[in-house]
Length: 192
Image (tube, rainbow, N blue to C red; front, side, top):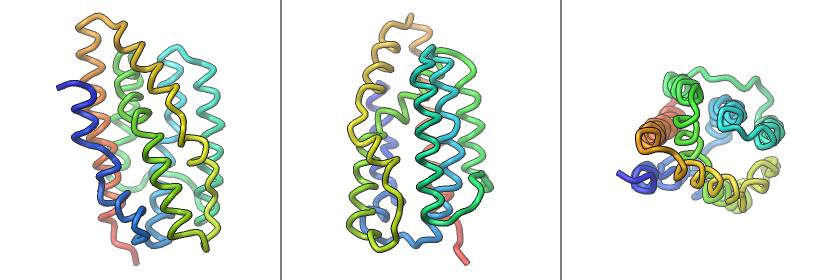
């Protein structure tokens, strides 16, 4: 399978959680849970960019995490941490993928290629259905047109030797599945 096939198969835009977001069907509690559970993954992205040798982007990603914290605080001020098993699995998969150069590239690509489209979709959903809730949009605004990072990752992946490309491909697949499953866990969580 190509990287595009892998990402298409687990496209986050097709996930029921993001579809419900875009349709205004999520509760504030679901958005709050998402902001905390997903936020732990957002905090890790910087590490992947360091392993990829892009220290300037890694520093920018820490700034982006601060924007995520503002998003989370605007919904429900609480500590960003993962409690759900699928979110913890996403963290484990991400940490494992961020240990080596080729796997870090594949894992980052799985997320970064999708980020502009998901940011745009979520921003539209916030403005259309949740505008009365004063949700901070800065994180999503920042990523709507952020196509430079996926292009850079694609260049780095194409420069890999074939066996390293296979490692990056597997990491991309594992990351896509972990991202999908984490969203499913958030969506399936019973809100009391």
